[in-house]
Picture 1 (cartoon, rainbow, N blue to C red):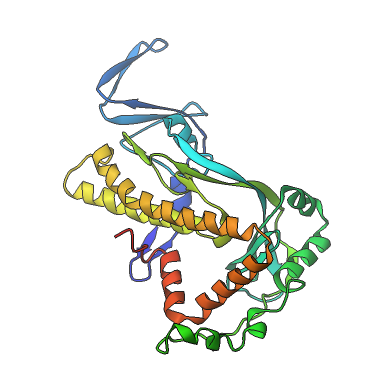
Picture 2: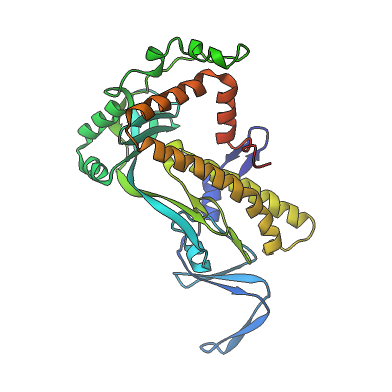
Length: 340
């Protein structure tokens, strides 16, 4: 793994994945607060278990011992469940269809469109391929999952481009004038054009559907255990912020652990891990509240509210300082003013 601080990038190689993803499922987890002796009746040998370790028993019968377990195993985290972390959340009564699609040309832009049934996102993954995340009702998701490939591809292209009104530029070409009352010194982003997303030509993977929900762990840390990413918080995918929250957790935890190691602190001590929780929990809760609010606002189809939503998006796009602030916050470069 390579870190590039100047561009805030992480480069992962196949060997990194092979080294960090254990090929067996976690079956149980035991923490040893003090030294003990464990006797094996079969071999009549005694093994000494050192103080301050966590024992991970795998489903294949093997065991691992470590000073710190990082639960980064997703929204259905086995680490979180075995450690007894409590969670808060609710279901959205929506499903998301995910799949990989191929375009006739390369795609290097992330696209999202808000539809009456839920948003659809087209996320580039290299060359002519993109991932689809399409939110809709469980019934619609079931129908689209079993739909034949040609019909599904047609539905995706229709959702991304046709049938839901013109692109923003065509009905807001003079949008900057509408916000002149906000002050003459504002820089407007009126020169930006809205391009048409590249057409999908075929499916490149199977389709899968899963229910959407909000979940937040009441605590992120315990003695020798810490949760990050979806194991600590799961959000609605409408803005693609789940991965950014996870990256923020990973960067913060690595920094906190590094600071602890530098002064000789046990990396499994709760007092050290609480620093990570104190920094990440407010930021995660704030973003979760924003995303949950977006989900609720866009789940209502009401004329006046639709107009207000459109006006808010146009304002965000045409007022450059506001647009830059939203991008900076969404990318994790800055926090809301209430969280220093």
